[in-house]
Image (cartoon, rainbow, N blue to C red; front, top):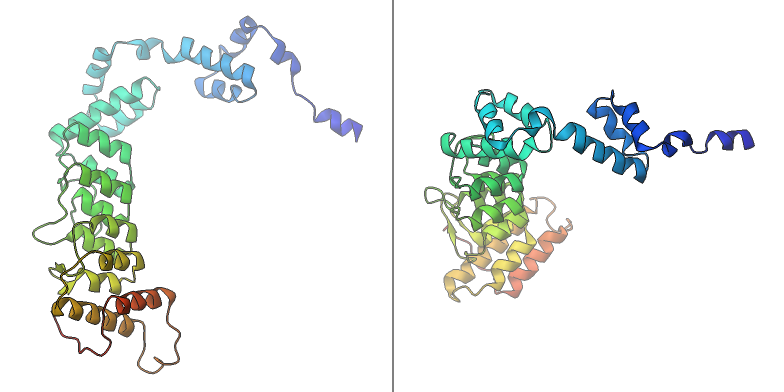
Length: 293
């Protein structure tokens, strides 16, 4: 046991006691990728390795060139993959190259990277593109599988609520060709937080073009309890049409959650129970005959 404990003691104590001059000689032949693990041994070697890399690796040679010359080099790289590799060569090059790539995309690529960022939830990248004048309504670049989307539609389709808020803050339209497509996709894909964000300007009676239903009915169909609560708490017109709207929503949600042969025996899902209770509390009549809108 004592022998085993001895083997598990501190390794290479002599290396840790060496003066920096000798450490310089030892790691001079190391590659940059081999120097980095040394910084994880202890605090002393961490500060030594970071200082060494900054002094002798990161700010020498090509990396030490002024920004103007680095930009000239970037312009000679016609392939996007080559630019990406060049950007990852050092911490200093990365922001210079990425800024160039983004500016070029905004100017010549119709902000196609914005849809790429929207799909992959890259908020920092999206904000930089927008701050540089990127087109928040672009339909170029990566898009959802079914066709070209705007960045807001992409973010809603994939459920990225932070991205949705960012695009709205930069003036993205919530409607496309008269349809509230971002909201409809959020409902269809089950992204309730996104649907709540996109529903701020609508009421329960808002008619959704193409779906032939109201917002309340669609929220009930999607079984989004929080969205139903939000819509019911907003002051809609208190008239017979709104009562019909809520009664139709109640009928639809119960019909969707039941089957013909076991409606009485079947225990309702909790979200359906909550939705039905809220509708009844807000005036829905289970005895009212439903009708199409």
